[in-house]
Amino acid sequence: MTRRGLRIAIPKGRLQPGALETFAAAGLDVPDAADLASRRLLFTRGGIEWIVVKDGDVPVYVEFGSADAGISGLDQILEHEADVYQPVELAFGRCRMMLIGSPDAPPLTRGVASTIATKYPNVTRRFLRERGFHLDIVPLQGSVELAAVLNLAPYIVDLVETGETARVHRLRLLETIAEIRPHFIVNKSSYRRDPELFRGLIATLLEKSTSMRQVGAM
Amino acid sequence: MTTISTDISYPVGVRALLVDETARRRKLEARVVDRFEASGYGEIILPMIDFVEPYAALGDAASGPERYRFTDREGELVAIRSDFTPMVARVLAPALGTLDLPLRVFYRGDVIRWGKSRLGLNREFFQIGIESIGADSAEADIEMLTIAAETAAAIGQAPTITWTDVSLAESLLEAIPEQSRLAIRRALANKQTGELAPFRDLLASEPWEILRHLIAGSIDTAMLSRFAPTSALADRIETTRRAVSSIRAARIVLTLDDLDETSSYYTGLRFRIFTGGRQSPVGGGGRYDRLYGFFGRSAPAIGFTLSLDELEQSS
Image (cartoon, rainbow over all chains, first blue to last red; front, side, top):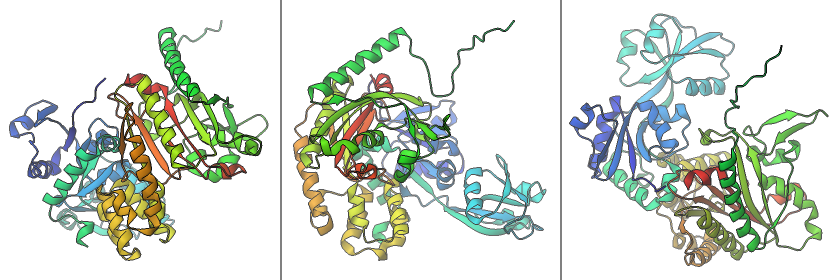
């Protein structure tokens, strides 16, 4: 059994254009529009195997080594508690993960028995535990704001980019749980087996992604 | 009439080996045993279950949720064996005063544990490993890496061993308050560059520079030599690096920037063994000089273990 070549996971959805631009700027030969429009699941370009998966699946593929590296939002890394290297924060696609209340939700205090809807049940559970709150979590797949608008749950945890959706529906932005940025992530065993390859890639991504937070710039 | 179920499904993570698989397993096992015995290691046999309480001071590393625990007929909380090394320490520590050191032993048998990182893998797996108790020298580290390389080469394809020294994080962060130290170690373990920033003011310029290079993977022993708290460690790492560079049985890679969030029970050398195309390690080990102290008699110790289930899948 010989070791395969480098395999990188690209997220579908809102992070995809930025992810492709990031790798292209680092000099990698990324899948083009025709590749992405096809029904193929795996593309080989420039000696790299590229896979395109749902954003929430990127940390899973990388943590368990089916991909060596990828780009994933911090929301998904936190939700999966993925044990991966997260060496580069990228400048695009920034947002906040927030606790949001419906217009008539009472203040969230200890002892309040209520419900909270979210796409991020694990992050939400940890957040509630830290605060000493005991709420039933309603897991949803999407359009989480609607849960607060229709009173499925008076509280939600969701990503907020501009806050426009919340404003239109008179939802209240109660607290920021995490600042969310996309990260370049790397499988730890892949890095250990070929550290020079990944150090080079990380250095290039750090250099090309100018507005990321760098320790050296502080 | 009662019928006997013919369903042969098992709980998640365990399975039976039939004749051919068992023959392959025993052959592999025999090759490893031959290698250990030729290196002067004698076999010990340990029980399959033990009390939970003696391991409590070790924290999650030896008594955590990965273990299968239950109450026995006497009402004692016991656990199924999940890691040989602490068990070997508990067995041997009381006897160390009467034994010639270094003491070289090997063990083999099943361990059972659950772990998120073992997705889709067995929860019961056959381990075989060695321990050398009583030697704290770089020579003992080199001996262990050499045996690991030769054993991996004897049973797997294209072996690679990656190694680091986990005491590096402790040396750099010893003056830092515990809570911040944990956060910095988490950032280092996951290469979360941005997460280091809030701790800039806690560190003098030299350790801060080393941390920056560590997280970026651009660290080398020359940098460690220039900083007093890590200069002796740098010498030791260099001694080991030079010695293992002549080992031809495996590719041996120094990865100083490979630091775990917690050191578990490891206190120095830490290495992982890869073979073939398999993504996850087939084994690993290192130095644990404080482990025996938990069981009543301090002694430096070093060892490694191989998982034969993983090896079979990589060959």
